[in-house]
Image (cartoon, rainbow, N blue to C red; front, side):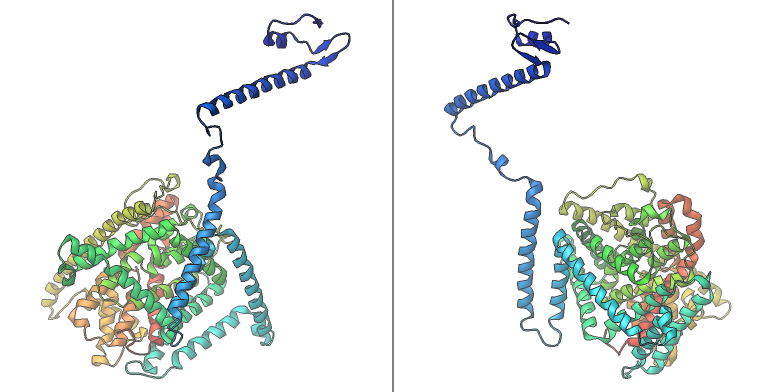
Length: 634
């Protein structure tokens, strides 16, 4: 091995590095190559530091203060500041909102005047709490403690029950629900148009509707009675809360009034585009279309801020826990009244392909049993009671679950039944709307969602979608009314040869659905009992055409102006759903695009889901007839 003497030095540092062998030896010193390289690196670093100090000193002389650390280097990074700023903002917002709540309730402690501000404060506070991880942990601990306490109370209560009820939770729930329904129906005093006779008919109708689905069930041996009994009980309790308590009525009345007032601001835009007198004309085109456009834009704004996804996710958690249904079913059921029958299915689009037939049946039933927030605004502008619309939608959610699980029990193993599902609150709602309209789209699985850049972008996008929705409503109503007029003209022409006056689709359906209207409990004494036939006609128009046409007839047709308050009230509940033949095509189109291979399964359960959704809405109308006190909504 070649060696280098201590006296011979290379001409440069690079040559020295290249000539060093693994062992450097002399008479008095022996070091390794790694140690030499380390020393050379230290020398280079020392020279670099020296030159930096020289350069710094010269730069200080040229520009005083230039060598100091910049404010960006001293200031914490965004990742460090964001949690701190969020905490400060939440604390300040919570404090301000608490102060406003205390001030607003100081002089309203009587007659439940404090309830609405308190619930509003509670809702906003819960949203604040959900935005910070630390507060979420505290709330979770509190809720777990409450649930443990409730469990102990329930265990102590069941310990004193008979053995049959103690060992069979379904029997216990059935007895409790039956007692609750009977007492709630007949306990209140009679009033004009609301006799116990009418209530008994509504109660009989509710039992007949439920029993008919048990008789026609696909498999009565495996019915999920937790969902059936729990859904029926939840539906009745919601109706009881709205129609029998001042607090419940005030809450839903407040929500309805605020929604109606919110939609009223669309008149400002209409007045700007036309004149100030146009919104007062009451035309469908200048009242409903602007309201729908504005409301959809507002929903997009709430969606961008995360409010829609937050509400849907927590509603779904409640349904999953109480009714024992899968996560996908719970999310769709909770979202249907907010974003509609097509969009709600898109929230769980990754799971549609793996859904069981019973889950598909439930998803479609939820869409048929309720209406969407976008058209809800149109009905309010037409003069329909906001309380009736909102309460009917909320009551029909558990009803759709109960009847669907009764008619089409679960025989498979849903993939979302044993684990929590995260709600896809960032769903592309524009894509959802295009699917709901039956428009062809790209492969959903490969679609990459485009989030709104900011609130203004979301609101602008929503306005565009709202205009398309309003246009679709106008086109459908115009076309359906024209087609209905054509059919009625042909029937009237045929009836003249058989001495049948006013022979029409409404005339035929008025007699076909007469028993159904009777079981709802409409006023059987008003105008010689003609209310039954008139409500049956409205139900027929709703099923054959759509609920929009039926609501238009109810609020504008002179033949329905003589309906008793009870009959009109029940009709509003019975019409509040997407259960019609045109909606079947919409839902089949949406689900078939989400899961093309399941198109046959979707079509197979579609008609059953349609009937189930229609009857779910009718059960809400029956419960409304059992609980109403008189003319409280008119």
